[in-house]
Each structure stands twice: as structure tokens, then as C-alpha cells.
Length: 371
Ligand SMILES: *Cc1c(COP(=O)(O)O)cnc(C)c1O
Ligand code: SF4
Image 1 (tube, rainbow, N blue to C red):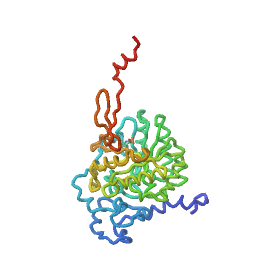
Image 2: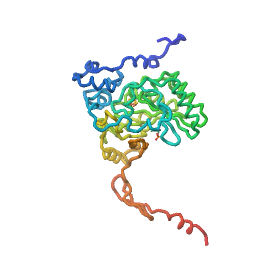
Image 3: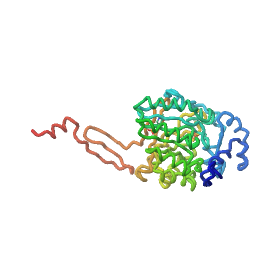
């Protein structure tokens, strides 16, 4: 392909735009590869749009497998008795459209409402693929103004939708504006494209991102089969640009709610230079309740990991509190008893250990003060 300047572009570098034109958006397209009854899916798609990149679609091996479940609509989406539209009440913490200010020192900036593949369990199912594809320049300007006016904001997280759906030039401009704000110390981007359309991660994108260090990227893989040569290449490019990579997974019934599957995913992530960051308990999203697991399942998975594998592989398991309380860490309990003098603990194998406490403040002062 030829640039305006007449330069040859690398195949990989240009490919992603072409790939984004070849999407599976109609149930009929599923039958090109799989024999299923698509009639019940038509109503689902009219409420919650379907979009699957050809790359991600090709990772499906059979009907109902963990890749299928994440991207192919299910009739259960329209029969959800529990879910709510905006389970985290993001709208309630949104001072300007698309910006969520929930924690004291950081904000989440939704810069896009589309993705390369729509996950059926998405927390922002209410908006992804349903609102205008991206915010207007005017809305971005309002978000930037808000951050400028709030010196307590030291961490800006670009999210969406998927920020990497924006053209390089637009991303460059937004990052430039955010970076120019004196009190913004770090910038983070959350993207699922290294998983769903890894061809999006190009040397050109990386050369833009690295201008804005310290910049962190959180990716989103949920199943070991999502880790391929292509996604390894994408994460390698980002890591080589000096970008620390974290992963945010969602605990999904029938996809990764199994200690063996989860451990394999976490190990594979470390091998592609991604540090597991969060494991999310499924939110109460309307149209996605069939993905929910019980919290005990998550705790058991963590118990199967802690002590048995590298601490580096273990994500923090969190529940994003319904109604907008923010992320709350959930841990297996390793404290058996606790008093003024000692803490009684169990280790990962169930053995009991005692940790003697130092004296409490007043006693400590009396002890340390010479007569
Ligand atoms: C998750 C989230 C953040 C970032 O949280 P960290 O725990 O710092 O990763 C910021 N704002 C909102 C609204 C969020 O949901
Ligand atoms: S990539 Fe993220 S924002 Fe997009 S549909 Fe999936 S979970 Fe939702």
C-alpha cells in the first residue's frame, strides 16, 4: 500500500484498517462456518449489536467454546432477570459526558464507544456499539477542561469502548492534550485490541505512545486460547516501547471459572510480558447475568494460585461495587485469629503459624525510653 507521501507501508502497519472493514456483524455470517439456528439471535442483535473481528472469529474452534461464548450473542441476553443498565452507576459519577470521576486522584475518560469485537459480557453494554462511535471534539475538550480544573487528578485512564479504535492522529492529539496538563503524572490506556485485533498494534502506534511516558497499558485477555503468535507480537511491540503492560480479566462462567484454565492464562500472560492486574467479579450488567459466577468460585481460584505459583502471576480479585462504591478487593482469608499480642495465620498448605506483634504504641514508648 502507498501513503500519500508515496512511501511503502509495511503490510502489518496498514492492515488493521482493512481488517476493520471485514467484521462479523450479522448472525447469517456465523453460518458460513458453523451450523446453528440463527433465528433466535436476530432479536438479540437488534438490542445488543454483534461485532466480531475475523481474527477473533477464527479463534473459535466449536460452537459454545470459550471464545464463542465471549463474542457470539446468546438468547439468554434478552431473558436476564437480574441485570441493570449501568451497574456501577457511572453516569452518577460523571461530571461531564464520558468522564467518570469516582476516586480522589484519578479519572476514567471514555474516548470511544466502539471496539473491534463486542464482548457479550461488557459492563458498558448499555453504550458500546449503541451510542455515536466516538465523542465529538467538543466533548473531548470538556473532558480536558475538567481535568485541567482539578489539580487533584494525577492519573488519567483512557477507556471506552476501545481507545485504540481511534485513528493514530486523533489518539496523538488527545494524549498530547492530557500530557500537557501539569498535574497529570501518569496516563493509562485500557484496550482489548491486543486480544481481539492484535494487528492494530503497529510500530507507528507505539512510536506515538512512547512520546507520552510514563504511560501504562492494560490489556484484556480472559482465556489461554486468546494468546496467540499475533497477540504475543502485539504485546511485545508495546513492551519494547517501554510500556508496562497489565491485564484485566473478567471471571466468566463457562469461560475461565476453573483453576486450571485460569492458571494457564496467567502463566501465558507472563510469557508475553503482561503482568496480571485485576480479576473482576462479573458486574450486574443487564443482558449478561448468564456469565455470573458465585464469589466462592473466585476465592477458590485465588486459593489455588496463592503459594502455588509466582506472586507475579496473581491478579487482585475485585468486586466493583454495585451502585458506584468502586473496586473492593476480595481475598481468601489467611488470618485465623488476631489479638493484641499475636496474629494466627494459615499458609497456603493449611499449616498454622503465629506472628508475635510488637508492643502497642504506649508500651513501646515506655520500653524504648531510658529511665
Ligand atoms: C477502575 C477505575 C479506575 C482505575 O482504578 P485503579 O484501581 O486505579 O486501577 C478509575 N476510575 C474508575 C471510574 C474506574 O472504574
Ligand atoms: S473490548 Fe471492553 S469495552 Fe469493548 S466490548 Fe469488550 S469489554 Fe466492552
